[in-house]
Amino acid sequence: MKFSRHCPEEVSVNLTPLIDVVFLLLIFFMVSTTFTKETQLEIDLPGANAGAQEKPVAHIEIQISAEGVYHLNGEPIADSSDMGLRAALEAVEEPAGDTPLVIAADAATPHQAVVTAMDVAGQLGYTRLSITTQELGK
Image 1 (cartoon, helix red, strand yellow):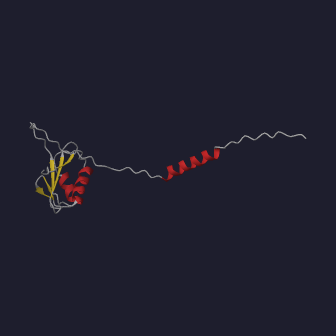
Image 2 (cartoon, helix red, strand yellow; image 1 turned 180 degrees about the vertical axis):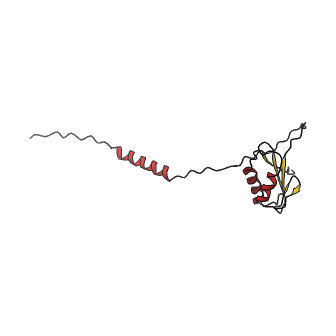
Image 3 (cartoon, one colour; image 1 turned 90 degrees about the vertical axis):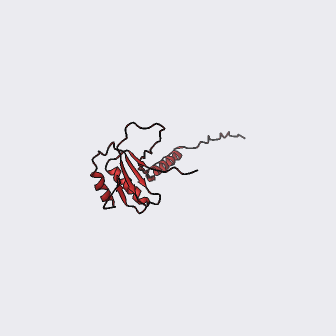
């Protein structure tokens, strides 16, 4: 009797289909993912120094009452809408680029009034924007 020697075949895993599936998943996630760019308005909050300033810096101040009425440098704006505020800011003699713009809003002011003031200032090119605050008692 002649026994034949049966050599076991070498078992191997073919990785090609696995790599194909991984690439397909990668492409699927890359295509289906949405990338949003969030726009943020940079706010330069005012700082306090112990020393006094030698020369006061000219600035423009927008005051907003609790009812959402705008005042520009203490003068009331006839039309308290975004177009009225835009017209009043355009009439100011200082250039928009380097002139600091300060927004002083009442604590009970509607949020939309403050956002509108910031939006109009940004559209007109004001880059140095700050919001006044009051220190809370301890």
